Length: 404
Image (cartoon, rainbow, N blue to C red):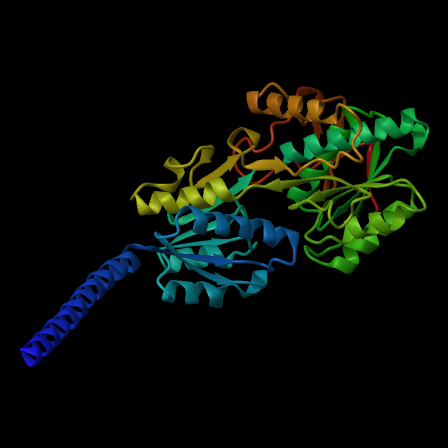
């Protein structure tokens, strides 16, 4: 009897093991089918970055990739190429297509993106507005997009102007010392449009202010940016703004503040952590609404431009504060005068409602390349009226000087 029980128990034990193994195997087969299905259904998305996360410009764009992965974790597979110069996009573009990417985003300024779109009509190519896709003969699978950054620059200018006003009222500087310096990459339209909007914001509070501009002739050069900022500070500029890719200008301000008053307004990311004594605020384009919206459109079989909130110009899109496409980083309240938050919020609200015109006032603008091309801002000038690519390319007489 004892032997029978032992044998039966062995049989039961063996049967139990076999059953368990079969269950595990069945579960594994089901999981494999499900997992394989998930991989098949996932959209392959490519990103090509001009630099890497060490530069504020690319770091800011990478935030959109992070948001995409966080919001659609099971529906996308991401492929990336970093540190790709503008004239070397061709190879990574081909590689991403070979990887099976259905949509590719890039923050490069390169005509090679358009050529790739012509070569691969079944892949969607989305480029930060190199040239607006509603101008010229561009393929249907080529898209451009950008935030109306002039709005954020204007509002950040108000913050700087309030600080200037405070320094003048407290006799830290004289009215004739209200000098604004600006470090720009190139004398391109987007840079000119940006620093003009910034100065107009400053002058809405401190009409004494004038601007001096220096170009680095490079989008990303820490040493050149820092050197230009340092030169402007030595000339007496007490506000330094920038349209370049590194923290060089912020560091120049932080190193100079011990001997003279100076504040910094940054671009693409908050710089308060690296320049706590001088960094007032920064502006940035929020790329998330477009990038996530474009991917969701493809997943749902819809057209990109019909699926995202913003101004649409053919295959080109733009939006400002109203759709969350541009932002200010957190204000450094250790530097900002009392009431700055309230005034900035009021300006943002007016821009969202369309009741505030940035490019308007008693100013004459002259095209630096053609003195016969002028604009009278008493009538106003509407930026981004027909494209995400800015068009204001005039130097304001008597208030902006380019030192190159």
